Image (tube, rainbow over all chains, first blue to last red; front, side, top):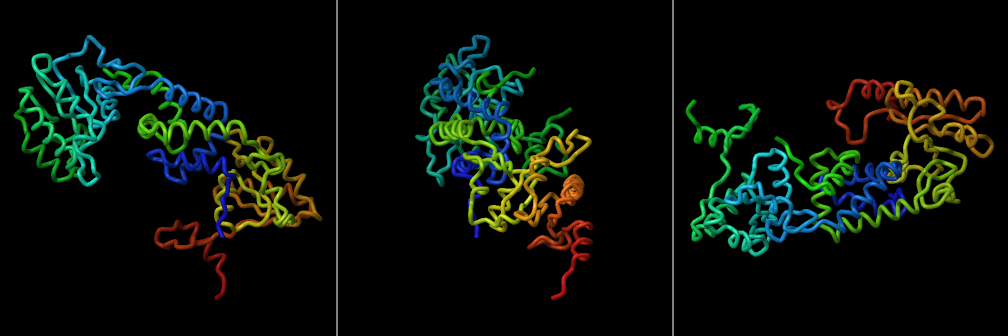
Length: 201
Length: 201
């Protein structure tokens, strides 16, 4: 026989926590227990942060980023190079590039990647708005910073075709050996790409 | 150069999520992004569940379990054998035993285990209340369902000494090979315990 261990209120909390990426049902139980035990330094602050997020966070009408204003802080940043748009699949990718501090341009967040099998076609993504934005003379280059996966690459292929008529330059990230990567841990595709794109010293 | 990728509201949410057990800073960012993107089916329900937890969940005065009532549902359950108390370190352990449906007695939650190095002595644990509860004739057996770790075992040792004067029977979980366990993956200690506690077929 199996019984519900906790009351319905706690079970509901566990259930919702388990929907978060990275939390299985076991870790969701641990998280729920932590929240309940650490009411003042965890449960109440989280509730407050979620309330703030629910009330104040919006999607940028221009680029699809999330922020408390629209257009977002990045789109409004006058110091950024306006001649380039960096296209990413997801806000998480935008954050990764911003943390690295390697982009001084504006972004465009697609909100996913083309995946016909999952029913995700161009209409489900933030693509028409990109075509609209990526026009010379203001914008001269669109960098497709998409995942190096089959879906990412076919999304890049589709975008290159859609952007061609505008005359904007379309670029993609270089593939190669990750910094700090050890050769004998890398897959064959990465090694092949790194050799193909080799540079002279 | 490294910049904050998201605004302060989102950074705060990420920071708090990263305090949950099982979530590192990377998965906390993923979780925050999910929450923001899935406002209606994730963010708002989680906020509501946390509010309910904050308002309604209390610690059982008798056994230390968490519930919406005190004494808790388990302590109040008339169908449970009142002659036995199962001692666990943590509410998570109580949940594990309840899910397995292997206990039909009441519990006592210590709220931790003895760990002199971390400054956790008997006074920091819910031990005096256990000594008070574990008295014949109502209670005849105390099962110490503690972790098979050094701390768990020294806690068990301490409790056995404290409970001895009452005349109550003190038992512990059997050690051995886990069900479904493969011998060549088990540590020597487990194998030794399983051989020592072997039973005839």
